[in-house]
Image 1 (spheres, rainbow, N blue to C red):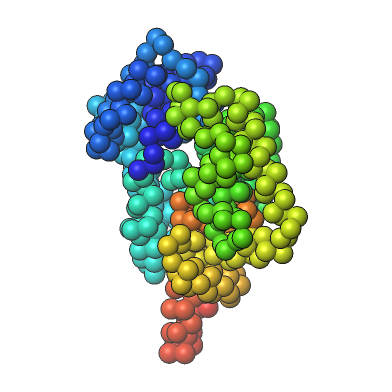
Image 2 (cartoon, rainbow, N blue to C red):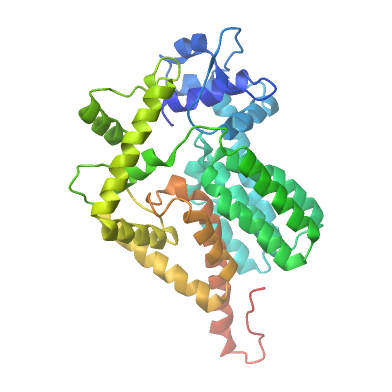
Length: 390
């Protein structure tokens, strides 16, 4: 699972939710869980305490999702509860999507590629916010297939998708795409006005969390060879800052110096300066990296352990792009672009980051399989209708 310093603010924050929403965590609880094993920590139910401190790092939305999980599963600790909720939502998303698809071939391929894919299930059972990036792509599919009453999905989407953006801001473009597709397919004014509400909420609350892009962008340089010794890890960024300033970054959510406004501002300003300097010296290299990232977003994503697998992923990405053109599944291809363009220009599409895009890729493969099946049998039966993806 994710490290304690990153999960604890969400789990403790859910136990200390106040209205209006104020992200507070319990120092006493942090002391209790620090020595626990992973299984003990996942089963531990965090406490609401009178003495708490504000958390100021990362994005707030996942606190609300953990709060929902601990409310739905009150006998579980927050870690197990959020995994149970993610599993439940995954099952519902898969079943709902299967009901949208028209043929047995499409349903079988989608089920294998997304429903029971081990990589997908790993993220589903990972107690962190990456899983929830599948919700915007799912809403794009609902919009495309014009399910039910568009006004219901439009206004429900405005709220749910805003919560997802509050959890993972990089989903903002693919979330917006769902309203565009819904309006395009239905011409419903509700889609237009709900989209405006969604955009307004994102603008008003854009400063509600502290998760600047410069740390991620700097670390992203390390995905490929570079002369500055930057590696694809948080520790690499901390090490460069320590080497330049003599200050060691601590991510402890209770006592760490990343909580302090001044030190945090200096840290992000340092990484911003280093990234922009690298961009000025190596613009073509970063452009090349961005292209590789986008191509791999159509494939398996980026592997941190195997360069050969990244080449395979790139080849698969090109093949998926060709499949989009051949089958006419443009909306899923645009969906992958809208999803990945929020981070791929500066960070590689590791599977956790790319999770929501796998939903689109699975739909593309389902449509491709049906296209191949129909094409293969057309020679045998000339009266068989040509496959048309709606």
